[in-house]
Image: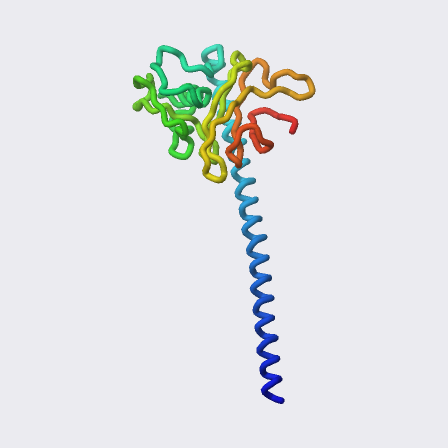
Length: 212
């Protein structure tokens, strides 16, 4: 009789252990999910602040030179190896040259990328290397820059998505869905592919207020 009781008690203890393990697994899942969500929220905030900082610097350049930097590479700086990430490369050249507002600020290791892995045929003025970098968002992808004079053009960007897959995306200036007119019609647009690393999805981040 005592032996049967001990076996029953042992079986009950095993069930309790399994229940505890299941509870711990569920709690771990929600904890990891919440941590990832909090991290993504923080990164989105960093991305928005970064775009705001770049916007201020571009406005400063416009005040000094009378116009915003081009979003097409000028011919006098040498030829690029390809036609990818051009707007972001122009952004890097404009803001990070020696004496420019972003020099020593935006061109830190985590602030740059070169997803298309190209370089100029000669070293541009104000730089020490020929590598044609792009200014990067917190997820390591190039920030698209389009000046209003190029709003009708199509740009192509190489990004690495959240799964680590590299893809090429077509990027155009965004329009207000209500009016059909471009946002920032007389200035420029800055666009990040967002946490998923894919342009054209709902988590894209812009330097202007949009309607999702």
